[in-house]
Image 1 (spheres, rainbow, N blue to C red):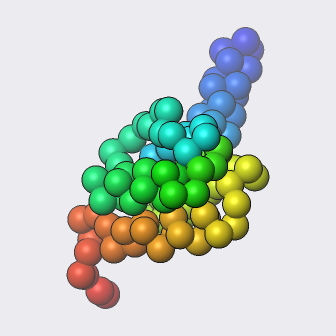
Image 2 (cartoon, rainbow, N blue to C red):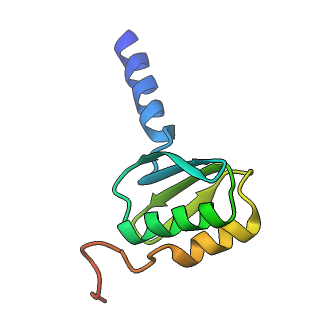
Length: 101
C-alpha cells in the first residue's frame, strides 16, 4: 500500500515540477544566472537590452510540441518584455522545421 502512495507522490512531483527549457536571471541590468541551451544571438541581445535599460527579474522559456513560450517575472517592465520578444529567435522549432502534413 505504501508503494502506491510513494508512486503517486513521484508522479505528482514530475507533472507539476517547473521545467523551463532556458532560464535567464538578471539583477540590476547584469546577467547573474543562466540555464539551458541559449542561442548566442538571443543571449547577446538580452545582455544588450539589460545594459541599455537595467532591470531585475527572470526570463523563462518553455517549449511544448507546438509552440515556444516566454514567461517573465513581474519585475520586468513591459517595454523590456517587448524588446526581448523581438530578439527571441522564433524560428528555432527543432527537427520538424519546414515539414508540413
